[in-house]
Image (cartoon, rainbow over the protein chains, first blue to last red):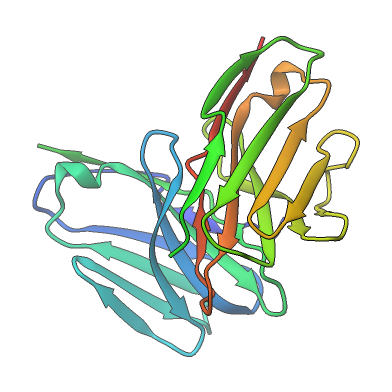
Length: 111
Length: 114
């Protein structure tokens, strides 16, 4: 399988704390994208990082990419109850537009 | 970003029947993608649909089971044929944004097969 792996599979933290999720993949990529999914609904695009980028920020989100290790991390700072969701990374292998998804991290923010 | 709608949003079907899911985009796109998300699992690509040509299916998915139509640049349908309880999943369509590598997803269709 070309699917990546995410860890942890589940993460539970207190509101206000930072949450870090990791993603590993297997093939060379053009870019890596992070998505959020609330309660089995559609996916919301969070951020895209290209293979020639090492770090990207968007609001409370910080994404890093290490192509030598084929890994990425998503940091959510100052977490809120509304951040409770599943988070997925997805990669597109070079030369292909289709996405390969990681297994996801289920994040729970406790008030 | 692209705005994508799907119909129906959810359905409960009897085994042996078929369901057609519609995906509508608010702009013209070259490629549309159909994904399946089984309960508690991640997303798996079913097929890629280009307008004017047959869909390209991923390993493990066949046209007889998941026929796809792509009549124009803003619309596609996925049919789940001869359903069994194992087909109970969320089915999502997605498109690539204009001049961007970002993929945008529809709200999904939650299918339950009894």
